[in-house]
Image (cartoon, rainbow, N blue to C red; front, side, top):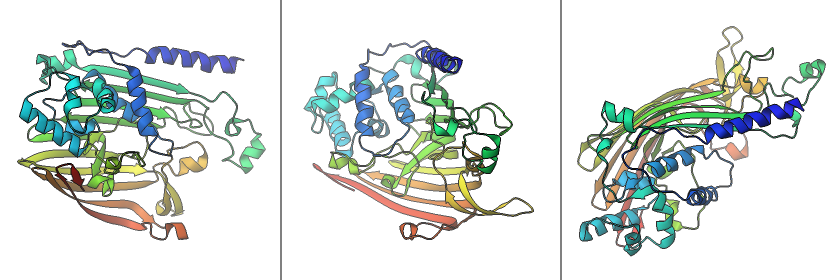
Length: 419
């Protein structure tokens, strides 16, 4: 009975704590938000994939714009893309503002080709038509006064006892050391984030999956969260467009050349077959593999031209094929693991088993309604990847280093988009 009361009590406490979000003083209070619209947006996107994904990062991005909405009259193309608008919608919106002047009401969006009542309703919580407040200039006093702090906590646990947590005898565990998880059944998530009008963001994310050890024990010296992630991100409008330090995401070449975050596939709309995402953005989710770790910067050396250079160096999970008996150095790996689970001695053995270094760049240029991009990057592994040969992986990569090159284009001709 005690074992049941303690998790439930902790869950109630964490839920109460998570219900309170810390805010600095704000010059303009956001309008009341219908949370059902946010839930519908998440449900709509989650319906475009068959896999079970962690949507905490997507929720975080949407929450940023709920509390600090985008002024559609002054929004850049990058900000409009973050609202999931496609090329035709962005082009028609820009032309409408240039022809008739700035919009004054959300209902005016219905007059623009490509915007219907359903789309306008879904955009309502994330946009505004008011001018930027005076406190939006990033000075030290404004950063301290108007910055928004947020703490998110989550506790999950399956109350029914699972086989991986069932007690076993010492002799049985010695024969099968991977038959029981090393940690408890709870899943813990804690994140702190700071945001200043979506221009400056930083934070830290911590997570522990069910079965992973949190407290040190005889089976494991591990203590604390299994996964830590930190980020700093700056977004500007002039020469320096993006600066990401720590953990971040990249999206180039419409998702074919490089796409480091989760992606959505099938959809009822044909236009969504082209992936439209912010090229550089911070990592705020709990996925332990789909991110870059290092630094990335985007500058504008010429008008309508963006240059992004990036560098990432991190350890990733891998299936170890063989090690040197004297130095314990990994000679080769059989696979790259993406589950993020470290619950048994065998899974812990593959944690951060290999070094992965990625560096490269991307060049984007725009000429009226035509855009052209080029991406090149190099990936280096700390040991050779030697997969077990099978028909399904006959053409998969094997080796130690890999070079990727990609070109992409998009053009809008009246009501037609080519890419």
